[in-house]
Amino acid sequence: TCLPLRQSSLTQATIHLLDHYARMVHMKRAPKGTLYRTAVVPVRLEGRNRRKAFDLTHRAGLLYTALARHCTDVYRNTGRSPIQKEAIAWAAATLEPEILRMHAHSKQGVFDRLADNTATALTNIASGEVPGARLPHRAKKYMPVTFTRNFGWQATSNGRLALSLGRSDGRIFLPIPHVTDPRTGQQVPPESWGEIELCWNRDQRRWFLHIAYRTRLDLPELDPNQIVAIDEGIINPMTLAVETSEAFEVVVINGRAARAARHRRNKATSAIA
Image 1 (spheres, rainbow, N blue to C red):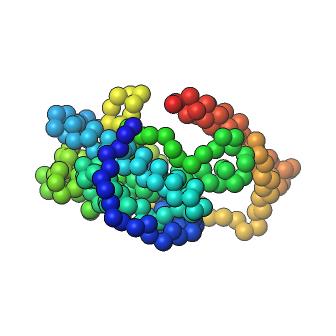
Image 2: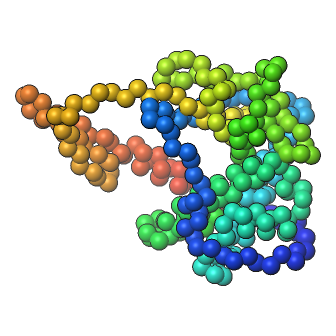
Image 3: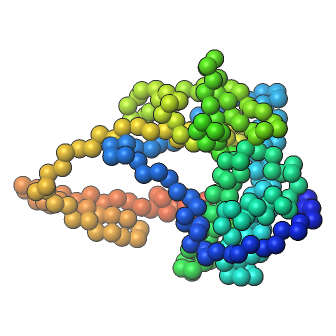
């Protein structure tokens, strides 16, 4: 995929240490008794909204690809990677403005995703446990787009959900989806929502919203005299044993299903080229 570039007089900023990636992607710690979940909600986009969504996710894919190539080049030349501010400044000075047509927080979300993927790749490369591990390098035609609360998305007074596309492209309007907490069975109002991702499901050929929300976590009262022994493993992540009045009760958490799912995913991912 050829990315349109324009001449830039931007000099390479000072390259910071790689551990800035870890500072980039952060989440506020949940208050005690609060749990964060993500609801996956199908939505229907038609006409202009559908075209806007496809154009937006395509631009996000182009931006991700350009940033990945830039960060990889910098890393290979210096052994370090640029932080978000430097990478976004490079994109603003180098890429065509058409690619950058999205909300500022959505652009940050693209880099956050790249930072996550890069950190994972570097961990795998350093450990040597994942054969063929590489920095992100594949071109992305489409990428999920992030909308932050109050800035990227808002609930309107007439019961619509507005997703901001930036200053020049207006917003996508759709009915406010119903989010139900599977644990309590109660509906979660928009006031409890956080970040929203707009995603295209290639297999189901439809749009989904990934909505993060807060819910209460009822913590059980623990018996301080009841001791649980935990043995960590590789195939089976944990084996737990607790003494009862008659014997020891043992619970084994089987990790084979997760390993098999990861193996299938890695094979499918490696087949995509």
